[in-house]
Image 1 (tube, rainbow, N blue to C red):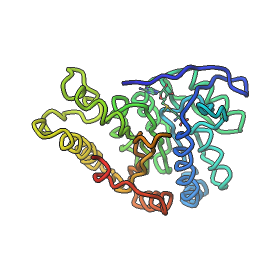
Image 2 (cartoon, rainbow, N blue to C red):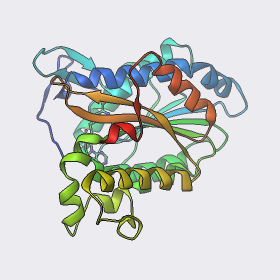
Image 3 (cartoon, rainbow, N blue to C red):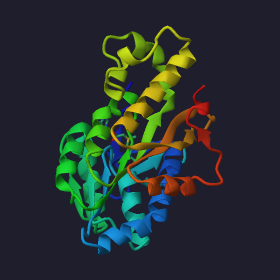
Length: 281
Ligand SMILES: C[S@@+](CC[C@H](N)C(=O)[O-])C[C@H]1O[C@@H](n2cnc3c(N)ncnc32)[C@H](O)[C@@H]1O
């Protein structure tokens, strides 16, 4: 259930990969949110903590070519850094991680070329989240972008680890396509993606229900578990669709602070909104 993309040399001489055009929409929502939240960041940057950090736990290479159009676009970490600087609230540190060290170091180099204070975190996203929590100022403001290809890599341990921070909000990519396509496999295989996504799920859902019900239960369980670690999962979700209108993934905010939910509402205003549960079926 993982996806890999061929790596090649980009127009700036560093490694990059190809993405679907919908990646632009994802970055657009990330940028909108970071722009709307710039005043909150400024407060922390000029206050006692002097710390407003960003972590991109699945950062990729920081640059990509759009499939079919061949247009070059920034990756999430680069887009996030640029918008934070443009809004005069540049992140005090940009932390990045990717399981592929080639992609991660390309992303780091791109950020350095733009003057970003970048720190690379080693290992997979679970290990990187632990390093991040140890590294940041406990009084600072923190924002995480969690953008895995598949549900199996959206390990709950990441969210649990980040929840230890006093101030942490997260924008999460939850793969609707994966959830729909692989539900049967995840329910029957011994090693299921749900083991990482919603640990203990076998005791907490009724598998004898019709498939749409089971799918909904898994999602509700994930949401409940997020709430159990003291975070608020937004009811406002943005559904990202493919070029043939196929449902790919949801973007949603998981917040420690209510203000983040307000910012997200603003970032997605005037858009067709998916309801968290209504868009499941
Ligand atoms: C959807 S791409 C990220 C794209 C990037 N966030 C952007 O928008 O430009 C997912 C990335 O996750 C990485 N990855 C896969 N499994 C991982 C894991 N367990 N921990 C960290 N990174 C992982 C892949 O190498 C890939 O670069």
